Image 1 (tube, rainbow, N blue to C red):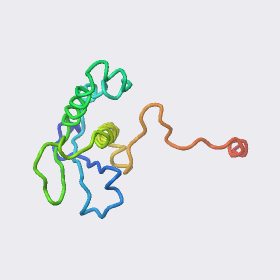
Image 2: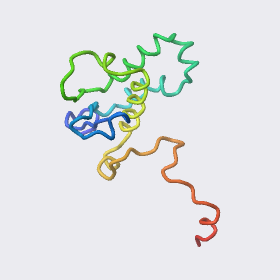
Image 3: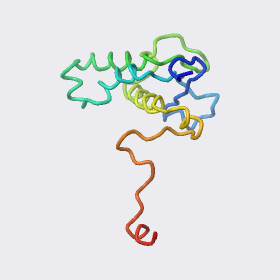
Image 4: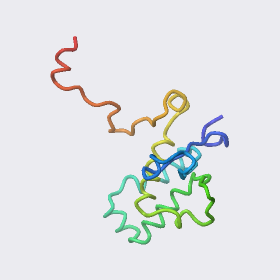
Length: 141
């Protein structure tokens, strides 16, 4: 079954600020995988500069668009104690951007990468490993 339509296929995102805490104290944001169409809907935020976004939407509109986009595939917020309210009441704008980029990156995984690795595959243009130094490259046959 394709990942976007399989309700059992989800992934969790933990913000950097919670990463060092015991798992029971971490807030986890559970997402389902995005379809290609949904992924394209998120591209507007990912592809434009902050200045272009502000020109298109205004400062308040950028924040509204950010949270609207996060909600495309957000399934649940797992935290103890449970806090009722909208995601907009839980996050700073900076944390929302972090969540957006992490969820978008992890949603790109295919089944093979998901099963083979605990880390997301690189986005186009990202290096998957550091370049070897010239000395190391010269020593390699």
